[in-house]
Length: 238
Length: 193
Image (cartoon, rainbow over all chains, first blue to last red; front, side):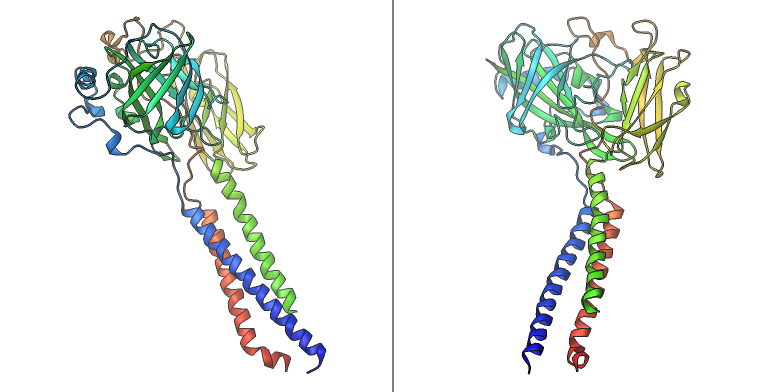
């Protein structure tokens, strides 16, 4: 066998190895594309364990049921952390939720003409909003914060809100340089067409907080089917 | 000859990979909603709508006939995957909530709501049956009603047929090329013979 043909045999072997690798890579790419194509992802949603327990729970259909807040006040006295002493009203400027790495500025929100809560405008989906005509966080009553779960481009300020757990900590820094510290009582998901207004926005006899964003599943046609609502009450101040 | 055929094979695989890459990007950021700003407008104001439902480099037509305006074009905004368009709310429009739709050239569509304000402070609130004075906070202000509209779906991904098809094609090409190579290898000595 001449040196020349030995050389060509080595070349052929090298080419075969290279082809093997190329095929292997192509197969991996194909599998990856198919997997990627079949995958669906959505923001995290709370488990049932994070909802109010059945004795406290009121479904959306029963939103007119009398006085759910009292049940929670009772619970706070007997069981969970004691409600903190209320602060005087002062505007919130920042909200921090360490468990889901939220540290965002707070802007004011009013009501849209259909009576629903406004949301931060496009381009400010990294901000949370506070219902300016409701209670101030830390003051007696129900303070309401809302923010986007995502915008047209990707995740927004409250993307991970549904991953928050009972007992979680929410801090709201206020214009008076006090910080109201809230503890999460429950994380609920309500469908858009059965939203329990009174339960979410209704008055409370102690400083409470609601943090709201979109959730409950997404469809290309109708968008998000519901809202994730975090219920919390004041447990401390700083 | 053999090298040429192999090159063709790898080029094809690479082309398919490129083909698959583009929709993946569009999909990652592609919501299907329609951003309407402001979502609540008075007559004679200019309303801007944004959507990423049309994907890359698309064009779309908006339909504002529900509020008494006509159709309006949506064109690429500062971001390639987001289309934007504007129209003006006619001063003849009555208060209420109206649906805006956008139809992309590729056949996809998106929709959103625009609420038109009335003249007086509360004149737009014609759903008095749901208005319960007992619901007021101590401050005497109204409570919000209903859910919040805080998501457009940009953080979601739904299954993508283009990617599945591209992946299947890559796998098919791989299998065929592999089969051919194995056959040639089996016949190898005769070829060189």
